[in-house]
Length: 184
Image 1 (spheres, rainbow, N blue to C red):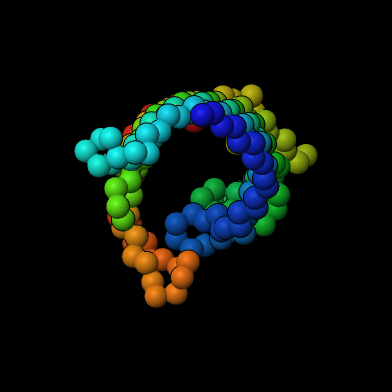
Image 2: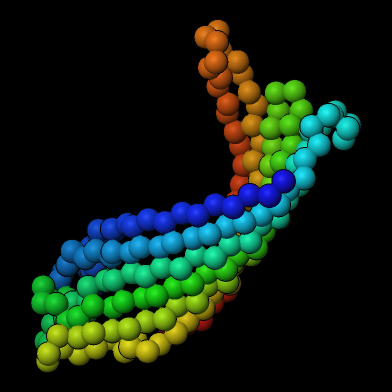
């Protein structure tokens, strides 16, 4: 069968920008929003025909687009490694990500397992606006891209509890990602 999924959201991340010596720390936040569509197709055999295992195989493609905005702070003229509390501007980033992946899921008795291989290609476009008199950080009009290949797998075992409808499912797994991209 086939499937499609649409998602979207917003996020705000708060943190502290610093110069690694604890002087000139400045609170900062990043606001972001995104929208995504994913579609795929899979095929499953649930009759134990693979040496007692039920298997499902599939592939998916996806597109995510979004943007983020981050405040940029001025540096101290006497010590450029220190940030001041004065706003220098805002860095806006638009991003587009395409992905393609293959996956397999398996079940036998109480064992569950899955493995996924996924490739992502992401493009970034930067726009910088500055406050009058502030120095820009030099990213206005810049672009960058990154590519990532991820292999992830996990295995689970279902323990039924004495209460009907409740189970305990421990799992073990790994995820390995190799990323390559432009230097900004």
